[in-house]
Length: 264
Image 1: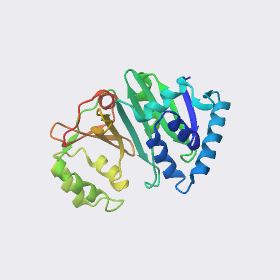
Image 2 (image 1 turned 120 degrees about the vertical axis):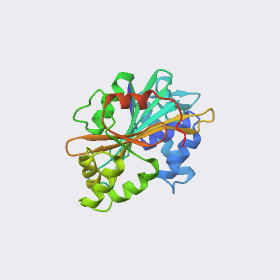
Image 3 (image 1 turned 30 degrees about the vertical axis):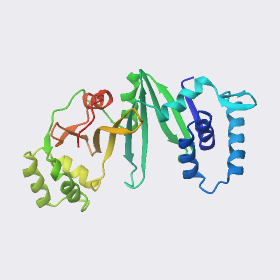
Image 4 (image 1 turned 90 degrees about the vertical axis):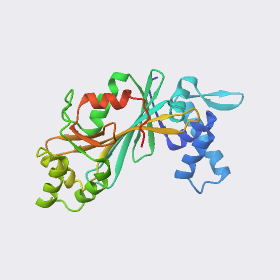
């Protein structure tokens, strides 16, 4: 079994079955905040029968439990060693969607939501397919092996930069000249125009690792800006200043393989 799809009710049952009550309660409170205990019990019974029909659950001592081959798909959602989350805005720049890659030992699981967040899709992937799934999610038309750093942006200037980019759909000449001079490059006009059209809103790649208490620590955060002809990538150097590149496979591999916690 490489892939499972679970309704919200089935996922809540699965968490309960694995003793992950906090996670199950959290989802229940998100989707069914007014559900009474008696109603929850009935919902879990229906979910158990549904999983039994899918051959994903079994009866043990008059109770339904997940089969062992299914349990690993649930455990990874709570006990991954590392997670890389890809997020992007829709065309309206209002709603966001995301997919996550959970890493544990030599295993990688893809987790995404389908059908208006009503179905959880969890699939075990070969490590070499992660980059292709990221490319498909972001709709990269092409992916160069590497990219030079086109210019840099000081960390302390980043908030001001985004504020300027969010002002209007068209950049004023004064704003363009301001940031060309600060970035010490004349090769960024297309980048400035692309991020201005998105009003400073950026897609992202977030990498987290988990400590012994399962608390997340930030490894890295990349920003992705789809443009008219290029897709831009913002990464950080050792001083946390931002480096602007074209999207490239080498940088994506770095965020997938790097486990060093980012100091902020």
